Image (cartoon, rainbow, N blue to C red; front, side):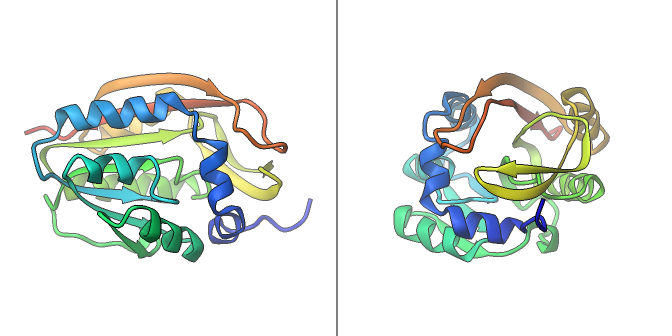
Length: 209
């Protein structure tokens, strides 16, 4: 296997092909729909790993929320800005972001931590918990697996993946001071010739008021 590509390299190369491959992920849209039902009007939402802006930022912005998205891939940021002009998108690494406590009503992170080592995922989730306002919500989605740096091929690109089993993820969120209020599991096959079936887990966690 060749050198694992960084997240920026992978998603700059994939561009809108990533959006196309995952466009039928109904569990993703359901998680955002449930978040929309829980948000107050004009909520401030941070989308970590915003990708092309669709569907997460697009749905949130269309509902009138104040959405800021970050991605490490310059091409993704450019696509998102074009596709979802009602939201703001910036180039940045989620590990380097800093906000005062209680800045955000909600934070979303859909499959955007799979190339972060476990310790870094844990650190980011801990900071996200601090950034949430009391009663704020985190929606976190990933491929649940007990893997700590396994080399795989994702949509034709060599990557090094890191994740946790679903139970361990819930323990991490609890350790960060968040209560899991929604859990959904699904199996999805991306619409791409180099993709296979993926287990997905969607967790919504609330910061105590």
